[in-house]
Length: 259
Image (tube, rainbow, N blue to C red; front, top):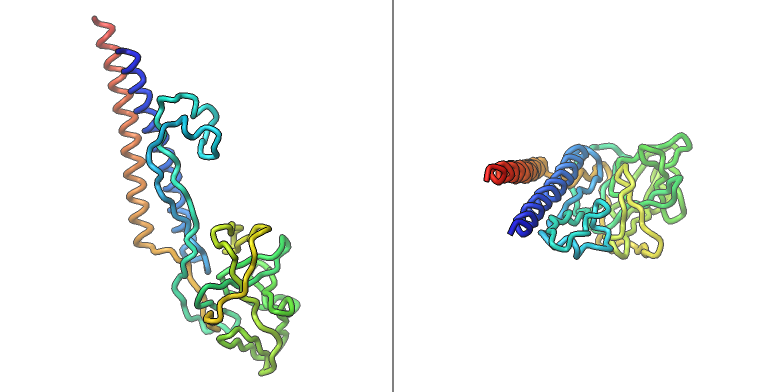
């Protein structure tokens, strides 16, 4: 009977411990989303709880956080939530800046960086020292013919992405989308890496470009704060559970010692 009781206590403590860690990671995720609420083109991270499973069932997978956590077949594990990026559009905000652009529909600007080609929805562009259209951190905005050179003259961009300078056509924005959006990885500065083997496809014909506006982060401050409160309460509940189990174990040991 003592062995069974010990296993139950161990299992309960393990669920509480792993649950608290999962809640803490969710808190970090929500906090990061809220911290990027003013980042142009930012896409929020979300998570889906996976429930409680036998720890042994996770052996050999990448879902164990520490070595040895799957050694006890009787242990139950509060699995880390499955995280993913929400690629849904954010609200468009007019700026009146001729180098600012936003995309309506399923497509991404193509950027040439020192690390290779990247995709982004952040259209807060500028002209670099060479007169090329560029991101704030120096990436070149690509058109059909390579980096788009603007130089001097009034910049115009049609809804179809045709770029003009002083009324003359100079290029067309290279708007693309990945064959598998879920394969894209965040790199920072609202840029996405498309892994090798994932095809880049032309954007659909119904995609439209808006000059003089930017796409804001797809993060709702109200929803984000609600998630923060929920995750915080979950963390507190798991911590209280651990404290309660520890106190009960200590009391049981003391009472048994008096017998």
